[in-house]
Length: 194
Ligand SMILES: C[S@@+](CC[C@H](N)C(=O)[O-])C[C@H]1O[C@@H](n2cnc3c(N)ncnc32)[C@H](O)[C@@H]1O
Image 1 (cartoon, protein in one colour):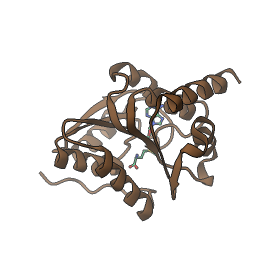
Image 2 (image 1 turned 45 degrees about the vertical axis):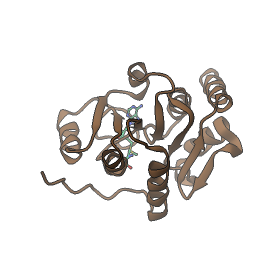
Image 3 (image 1 turned 180 degrees about the horizontal axis):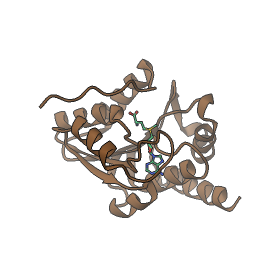
Image 4 (image 1 turned 90 degrees about the vertical axis):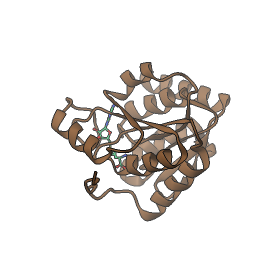
């Protein structure tokens, strides 16, 4: 079946290159990877294709409202369009808010999680902490929009991981450890209480 074209993504070529590198480094046969924030499916096409090549699976977590940066009410039409675009890839969908989806994913079960959902406080801080808990030690938590256009994302990444987070253009990434997981959880708690 033909895959429908994906609308232009705001990810730069260098960002796409880094996403591909991370996918190829961390996604191995029989592993599970995920992303928070799928929207039209641009990043899921890339990660899903590597999962297919490697015999891995991918979870797509999104409210599927059609809203680019926040979680609005679910739109069946929008969801069906994205799902059709991604048909043929080993992707399972969790069409729900990112905090609800956490209940369906085992702790330390992911080799890679790409965070590109809510871009404001406290949602981005909670996503970093919540999904850090789902990535295994030695796996990678990464995400999009570490840029001055999305200051809360930069602040959340800096607060949670400090200099441990590496950046390649607007893509950030960090290899998970117990220490970093605990740091992200502490910082999200402080952000909620502020
Ligand atoms: C920037 S877009 C994702 C773009 C996609 N990663 C790409 O590069 O092609 C963010 C998506 O996350 C969704 N989203 C925002 N906040 C969310 C939340 N709290 N829970 C679930 N989805 C959310 C938005 O509705 C949107 O579909």
